[in-house]
Amino acid sequence: MILLWGVPGDEPLDGVHAALERVGADVRLLDQRDSAEMRVELTVGVDGTLCGSITDSVGEIDLSCVGAAYVRPLDTIQACGAHSATDPALARAMAADNALIAWADLSSAYVVNRPQAMAANNAKPYQLAQVAGCGFTVPDTFVTTDDMAVRRFRERHGRVIYKSVSGVRSIVSQLTDDALSDVANCPTQFQEYVPGADVRVHVVDDMLLSVRIVCEADDYRYASRSGCEVAMEPVDLPADVAERCRTMAAKMELHLAGIDLRHASNGAWYCLEVNPSPGFTYFEAVTGQPISTAVAELLVRQDARARACTQA
Amino acid sequence: MIAVLASRLDPESCATVDAWSSADAALLSAEDLVCPGWAFSVGDPLRGTAVIDGRRISTASITAVLTRRPSVLPEELGRIHPADRAYVAAETNAFLVAWLSALPRTVVNRPTTTSLCGPAWDRLHWQCAAARIGLAWSDADETSDTHEVVVCGNRCVCAHDARESAMATALSRAAGTKLLGVRFHRRKIARVTVAPSLTDGDVRASLLDHLLGRS
Image (tube, rainbow over all chains, first blue to last red; front, side):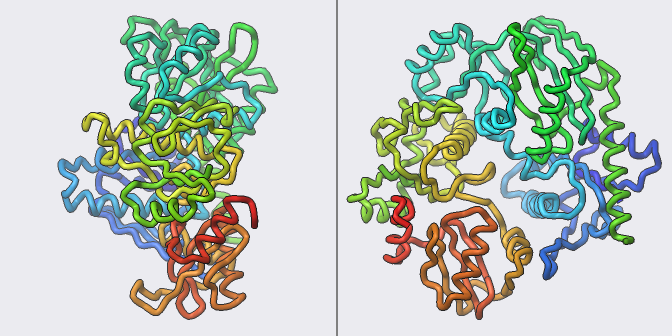
């Protein structure tokens, strides 16, 4: 069985769900909005194997029958719509969500992606060090609470951008003097600006789907706010860059990843970030690249492999 | 300098800093983290500066770090506007994960992406980790007759026998920790913590030896 966990209406989850249903896969959706009413029971076998079951309004799932899973949980408060931290339903939902995260981390099923592997994206300079360790060029990056040090960093690089250090979503912006006043109160991340073309690479196991993004905005995701247009076109990566993307995703234990590259004006390939739970439907809608189908096919293959192992 | 990353309200950590004063230990508090003076270059961590006990110092002068907290809490950031505390705490924790991971010094425990002081594992995770290396788990509750064995670097303190010592060391290795408290009940593991008590003199001495590279 293939397990999907998340909130219906989330486009990547819906896309993969629809693709699985099209091929008649044995798929079961766990709606995170119902976490407060779910019962999750987990036990550890003598060999460390995690067993157990999940019961929701649809019925009981024997977790030993799950061969593959695609997990895209939201923050529990957001998913269950609790209005107060003391809401008992929130406590129940958090308990169920935490148990499911533990299962996703420890299960022998093929999980896209394990929460532990995804967490590196919550500390961006940490992830960038991982990226550099995989052989990619990365922008010179500096985290500080010292505005004078930022000025020196800007003198060295000319154009500098800043963005959040954590996984909190932020709009990448070019540094201006106005933004310097808050630096003393919060560690802030600055990067040299690398001029060039953005390339988004979706890695699905060993398959790559790449797209070149043409946009004048500092952050193409928010291009409309600055009145800029975004254009995208599928692109083939040089073989060595493609291989580095595959190897990096594998080293980070990410079966699905959205890698943000920049092909610099000087010809170098920079890696800016790796998104472990990419919102790929935005790119799919514009380019027609079959990313949902690729994820669904991966889950079907891995579920079949798990079933074959069990039967053997 | 040995930086002890802990809360000013944690009496055990403050006592440890006092006990290690001759080894130049100092408290790295939440307040220090939102002061001007921090500078960290990804790829060259020793080139930067840190703020420890209110003083700006060169990162290169830090010889070791002991981390006694899983995260910095928004409530601790009193000088930050209440509306901004959750965001600043998230940014500070993310910065610490990167800084402590990159620091080419003894850091106990190295952070993981979900905790500043080692794996943020719950009972189920520890139970799985123990079972996967063949260690037995006890269902004894907290009030049962238990005792804590502490792994400090290459030493194991307070073990009743060599078997307990070997079990605790094996679990510490599997978890990738250098400091681990393993509570035993009748020769089975009953509870595990990455922040064991440091009140025992032998534990404190062994830990200091590890931080100073003497063990």
